[in-house]
Length: 435
Image (cartoon, rainbow, N blue to C red):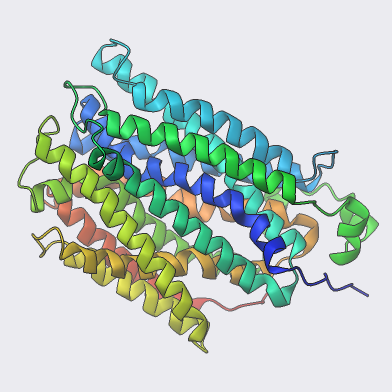
């Protein structure tokens, strides 16, 4: 008979995910500034999406491996935490180097190559640091409290995003330079990465010191894992073959959602600079002002996500709530084409935040209820491929689609909206807890 995991206090659940706040600051800085960094270094808009292939590609490789290895790991530091520490340490080092890609007197090609290597290492390390938080909730929280735990994780995730998105704007406001020589990243962005690195390592250490993971014998009892399951050597391919149907059905929704958000991260800087400030010149002050404003808009998205996350539990039908959230996000994306006022864009990004809130909480809550404890980490790592693969496909197609829409980068946000609408339809094909 399977034992029920004991209820955890609010602060125990909080501590499980607090490090996610710091990791998400790093992820938000990457999401909001990578296109800005590479455009400043001299990247062509039609090839800009190709720079976004590396992050999800590294996620597809790293997260299944971290999940599989950590399922079989136990040492004095724990089960998942060793991977958390390694990922955070590498991320901190890379966050210090990446924004300096244009400051080493390298040629344009060399600077972009250096930036690409740093981006690859940054996303690898962020993925390694991020995945253990999702796994620890699955490991240690009972079914009754799981929704609460993932809600807290979602809130900390969005709070971290808010801080990361606003950092360049705040540093500019206090007098840090937001302009730099051609090909050099402004100090406002560079200092943002430094601050994000410092906060991330402190938050990760806090979770590391306050959380004690279940030892193997206790974990096996609470997850009803037999000796044969514990010693099972199923590879990732075999796990995919045996995956519950919900894994694939939720994955289809994920495809459309993450396809859309890759284009938001890639094209919003130039789209807003052109549509609101009337410039595409990356060396101009107006372009860099627009870049800071995009951070504000992404922060508004994070606020919208936090607020909508409070509304989502009120839906009796989870599919209706999920689908409606994606429709609202689609409206937000499409509306950016018609808006030329920087403040009116707040409405657009609040709506986009509704879609983001559903994407962060609902897929994992629906999936983990369909999984057994013996391969929880491996399946969560594999499920990350439903986040990464659509981003890779979107990145590969970005230049082609951009040409088809007349090289208008704001039209790429409309494409993102259409993709979210497809995701909203796909929600109704999900059948929970079916094999």
